[in-house]
Length: 514
Image (cartoon, rainbow, N blue to C red):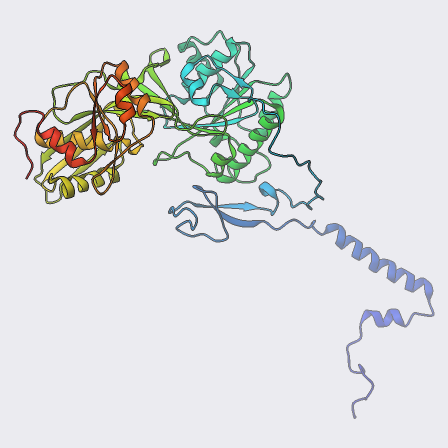
């Protein structure tokens, strides 16, 4: 039998054919349609609601850069093994995506206008107020970093107690210690009788709700930022996303209420504050609490300050009752000097607006190794290599067969290039076996040609040296007016060869120059 030419004649019958044949029976057709509609509604009811698809991303724990896939090295900061997987739903902080609202116009102004000084809260601790630029600025956020056990919590507990004694409302929130542990430290510091409000909490929303219940606090201390977590981010506590979100929430609270917020941050093995560097950009000031484990003093150093000078330092001494202020750090760094030993030179340095005198010690000894050692503590090792090269090339002092050890007394760290002359004098003194004058200070920058360049704040350096009993100074040339107005015995040196010749001729001793 030939196939039919009618389309679809050989297809398999379906249920809809039966429905179509009952067009003359309206009740039956209505019941079929209702049954189909009920099946569709039941399927829609049982279907799971549509959820935003979670997106996986890899965030560098050092700089906060977001990567779409894992890699061993971060492309932004160059650090290895710092990418950590974190999930997000596409919204800000891992939350649901939001439709951006329409922007509103803001008022524009000009550069000219009335200027008011930023209102500050003075703690009464002179060294702390010096570093912050005169006290905590209302509505500002500060980030304090330091090694574990250096004394960050001790310093902030003393600052909180000092502010509370002045009638300020201070809230201390700890995510690392219990309230009982904070009370024990306060008793040791004789600060248990102050009206500091304590809390042990890590959730940002709970912290903000707690401190907003009553009157506005004057100072809020968060110890530490790495322990905070917020509901707006779905990553684990301590990750870059959580640290950034927690810092943003606390900074927003400070700007809206006018309270000063102090955030405590951990540091890495390189000495940098752990977490994303964007946090250091968001806050108004960044302070580092430094110190060597074998020394009792601590240095609070300003790295960034929008409301005051940078590179300012405050010096404290650790004791059994807490941190004590050191009003004259030069006396501390110059204590117990051996004035007759070769290889020691006193450097007149500057830390922000404060002159500081510190002893630089050098030891040059014959080496038994094929490659002599170069060890530096408290100064830049690359800078030492440059000074050694200049002394060999332009002054004829050979260090190729000698080990060189350089140390800044007291564990102090020097960053300014004005210490070049003092380092060179200490090295030449050690290799020549000639002790430098005990009442002489050195400062000046050395160039690769052997010339000595002038540095800033020479008058302040000399005044500090005169206050401590020094009577001589070796400094760069070109200070004629300085020579007339100063009671010092000034020795102006134009080049490092002149300095080496003066040291070699200043006293007896067999030189080890080759």
